[in-house]
Image 1 (cartoon, rainbow, N blue to C red):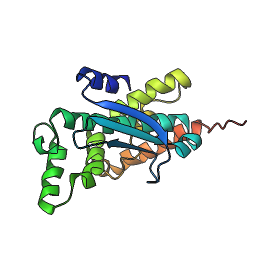
Image 2 (cartoon, rainbow, N blue to C red):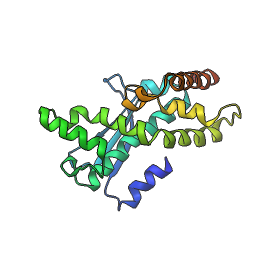
Image 3 (cartoon, rainbow, N blue to C red):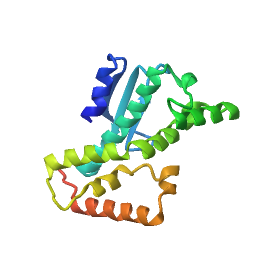
Image 4 (cartoon, rainbow, N blue to C red):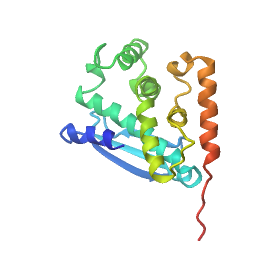
Length: 192
């Protein structure tokens, strides 16, 4: 999380990032939305019901996942929008932008899918390391390895081409590692 936020600070404060807890009607655990097409103000909302019912490690993963969405939007701000995408600065998003223009689809309609493709290709390891760092300070379970955190980092990315390109044995291992770490943690509820 610190390395993601440092990027915002090192870019001269050109992006205002706000985190909030709220009620999401989309059915998602979290959402990352720029408030305009300049990507200057980005709001990450984590669903309140999700926070109250999920395991701490899941909530941490959601914060990291949504922060990567914000990081991608901050890159778009640096290049001044979708129109300045090219094959070198953001190849996956450039291809999606060209296809969206050809079909008359708005980039907003395909942005989430394209972000997930980018995450699956380039950010699973960063999310996994963030989860490992978070968990070591909170639970310090020596049985949990980086593979378990990597498995959690894949949550939400199972519809990506990168996931589908993994061998079935690798996907099965990810599923088993995710089950292991989720079975390890219990949901703690606070009572008045």
